[in-house]
Length: 424
Ligand code: 2PG
Ligand code: MG
Image 1 (cartoon, protein in one colour):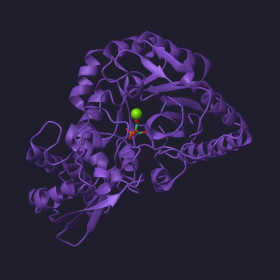
Image 2 (cartoon, helix red, strand yellow):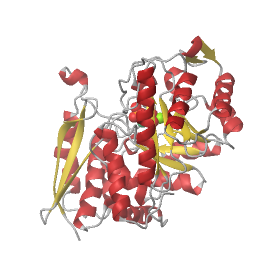
Image 3 (spheres, helix red, strand yellow):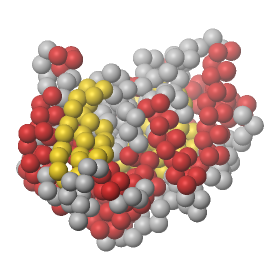
């Protein structure tokens, strides 16, 4: 049995220069491991609570109370426990907080311990983290999984809350569907990214990047973004619709006023039905196979319209809609909305709950996509999680900026060192 001897958190910084928590766990035998918590910008209203200090420091964004909660409270719960038993650790953390949204201790505080615990267990057992995650998943859910490499979704053009431009849709992603392995997917992704840069330069558009490393030019319309991407795919000698497909994250909660979807694109004010038609038209013209948050998280009738219209031909992903929460997902499944879920562990707060949600999705034939947050760090836990659970898909932004590329680079090493694991 392994035994935790100390748990220590400090405040560190994410890719936006905003404070976040890093937690280090040390075992009795002296081995240590740490993890860092990410943070979102376009957040769902039902996400677990991110505790920030809201005082005069760091524009109110410091996390010193959450850090203190780890050091003064959570550490005492965890010291002496065996990190192999992820579920027991997470249940102790969850019940100590005792609120539905983890607002007492802070989901960021709780997640930092949950993640560090997984890292130290893998390290102490001398196995890769993804293998540890496979084992933890079968312990928690009773379902055995085969590790596999995920298909990446590269967010090469940024709009919405992640960029200071006029593009409504938050993420335009490319999926190298026809790639034979992860390394080839990476090659295609980077080649298209650089082709897009050249095209933007030739049109005198900005090549400054948004929060997730994708370009963030001001364009005439959302459709112009799609045309530029198709152009970049062809310039890379790849075939749109065969080699490469397109995924969108509308993050539609950000431009819904309670009644209408307000698009800067042509000053459109669209009803749910009209916005669903608008998205449908885009899928008719471009090889779009995945649309995330195509409706506001509370526009359930809009989600029903969208699912009826597009659900059989397109992956419809609930992010702000489901917030990685099993109960909210079950409710959505009952209402027959969406057909896939985005998985972000800080939306729910522990590894255990994240795995339970993924399992619930699988049992109901929903696909899962593991995701970064727009505020990221050098932490690469999501890469191992995607492989270990054989999830099949990951989005971690553009193939640019170390906070994004760190995840892809970790996946390249996993592919190299486990040459029998295939791209799903
Ligand atoms: C999203 C995420 C990640 P954020 O909406 O899918 O791309 O953004 O972390 O800002 O919620
Ligand atoms: Mg999203």
